[in-house]
Image (tube, chains in turn brown, red):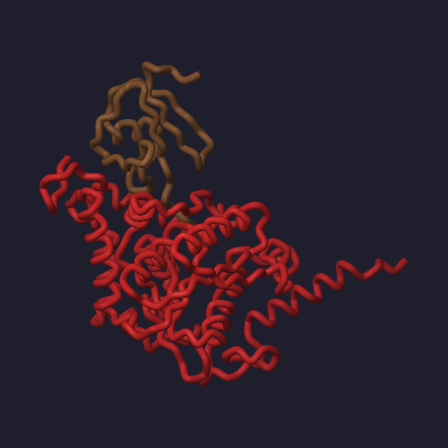
Length: 70
Length: 316
């Protein structure tokens, strides 16, 4: 069960999920999650979010790493 | 935040390295212009080229194929099934699904059928998977291109890949590698097909954003063999610098590519570091090589020997 009063931040490649209080900007959520902004894109459903986008409580966002190795 | 180009729509992508933010439509224009300018400035492709696009199922290669098709180039996709449990199947699914959506059927090379799946080959010859993978992929890129009469091989290496490689080459003063690092490696009369990296001006964030906004379903998981890749260390160092000083990566790479840079000899210095004389045909497979047999055939022979040693009964 998700807490409707929180923001759910999913990091699928790390198989992690965080619940953080909102409203907060994407860049602040990334800082809290320990993720550098130049290494990810942040999505909400089919929408891409800019780093200054304000995320409201009850929202689920995905943080997708873009770094490929090898 | 409003789009800096049309100044009407809400921005979907912010790009501190360009001091810009774009709505979806303007970002598509921006991204495609970055790629086409990269092609034009370094004369990577000509309109009449037949392009073999090497696709892994990841964002960069699928985005590259997408852009080249949209720009009107004649392209076919090449997927190499590396034989990595689970990961290869999922990557292949993405490639096939994307290709089908564009009315294409990719060329597929199955390394298990070729007798050299990467994980087993690495165990047999006790080498890093990434090193074997590089040799094997380069071999098949060229072989498939030559056999299929393609005029050029295109890979999805982006600005982050190229600057990470540049940093690694500089830190170890790999002068021979520095001399050859370029988005264009010319072909040779002896059968080496021209290789190009049309995404050299765009970052990983930009290709990921383009792929996401275009609805390209790419594999987001990382290759399990590359977890310890040194390129990731260089990428992390550069992304820390980029965070503090946006735009550093492109300045770093453009400066390196400047023809006046004495570290670079230009695309004509495309021969491998151990190249002596002119390339000739591999005694085993006929591929161009500077040795008696090519590095792929030598590796395959080592794998075959290791496999037969393992299979041999232990004498008492």
